Length: 161
Image 1 (cartoon, one colour):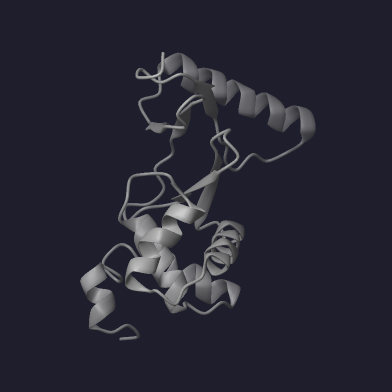
Image 2 (cartoon, rainbow, N blue to C red):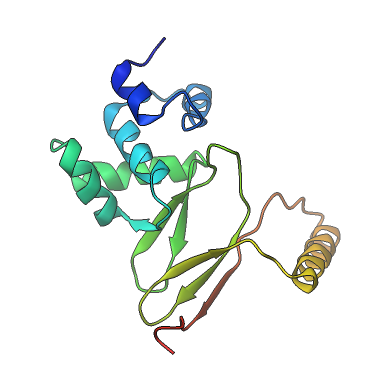
């Protein structure tokens, strides 16, 4: 086994390590800083900024610098392991592209006042139909194969209304 007891305690190899094959496929090593950042993202339902990730990782791995967090998040985004979310406040937030059970497609509602990010998966039938027709029309018009999409709605959350 490639990973020691520490990694098994954290859940690697038991559903959380879906990204390991991507590192090997892209020719990158799985380093401790990368593991720590992925661990933080794997163990939260929040959409964290680079600074918030840094503060969480710094508790267990104090040698990690904020610059390394930014570089790692950039690499993870390029590899398709994390998704960057623009919350409209100048601070990008991050989430894993997949979880232990695979990709869970969802859209975002972002509060323009407090920056709260809400994931939603309970799509209404009209929304599914509109998105399907839009993807089909764009694919035909531009001879473009659509692989995925991201939809974000900006507004005011219940607390900020």
